[in-house]
Image 1 (spheres, rainbow, N blue to C red):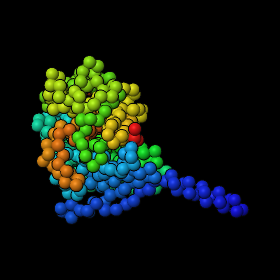
Image 2: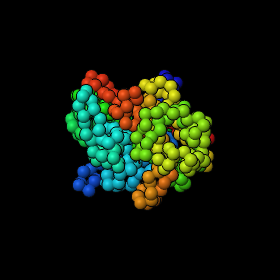
Image 3: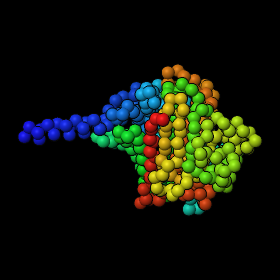
Image 4: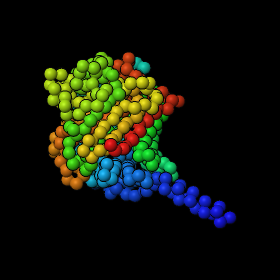
Length: 372
Ligand code: BGC
């Protein structure tokens, strides 16, 4: 009997040592008094992720470096109101259509839809009040081998000009293997288009200590989609080999980012392009790897989506002060945004962004952290 109790106690300890916890708390309030909630997922390996209800946003992500120092590896703000007032989508869940739709127009079953143009001539990241600026609801919070939070949002038929009532969930979960998984799901009441993604700005140096030019990036993509001067895909799927877009083996971000002989670099002011991820869309497969040689932090991203937008924070210009009053400047972060290709509704030969009633949209992203 004694042994049984001892064995049970040991088992209990083991289970506890491998459990990740989810803790619910507040994240202040907006200027209009709306209270913002947050859930912190923590594991036994030193990682923790804070997700807030405004925009189902990944507000902070604490990850140990090679010496075990735990620091924040995503840009953001200290207060919820700043996320609303400053249009950079730090860590946000972006929708209905992440990235651009040319001239804010698309047609579906013979009907033309007009969306707001909030990025020069184009529609960007869901419009004036996209999912990043909406209050999401916490559906459930749980601890266990995976600490998890499920958030949901119901987007009314016609919101920001898109057809169909869209019911969306974002599920964040963290396990002890330092994998943060994010799953977007959606259903619609009418045929519509959508592209949900997370817009985290990663800076693996920790607390934005350095820019990302020294980071080594690998992208598992043999092709990318070149763009025009307003960052709308031309429709071409171009081989990366022989170009500054070849990250099939690891390259320092900064090595070729100023190579203005490539018109695509001029258009993007650096990297701001969709890469076509090798392998089959719909299957979880490696898309990108980022390594900061100084802190030793490594991020590996696996995705189910057909593409990933690689954006190097080119439009950060130092006017916004983020966490700890750091001025965020060009090249301070790497965004890797998995999704369908930009402007897909206007490119019938791109992977479809259409969702019909009765179907479930899915986009799964796994961010795995380690050190080297
Ligand atoms: C786009 C950039 C844009 C940024 C805004 C990225 O997804 O590719 O062009 O400036 O989002 O935060």
